[in-house]
Image (tube, rainbow, N blue to C red; front, side, top):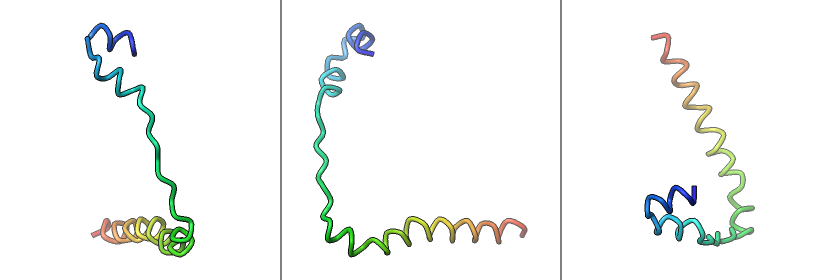
Length: 59
């Protein structure tokens, strides 16, 4: 991939690939406080949407 970028003269792409990204850590207290709500949102809403589409599909 570096050879292709060099031949295409995309020096900006090579510089972008070498950068390090520092991700901020989550606040553990907030995570523990909102854990149940996050589970409900990430698991409950998709299941509810599937049930709604499943009930509407025979119509």
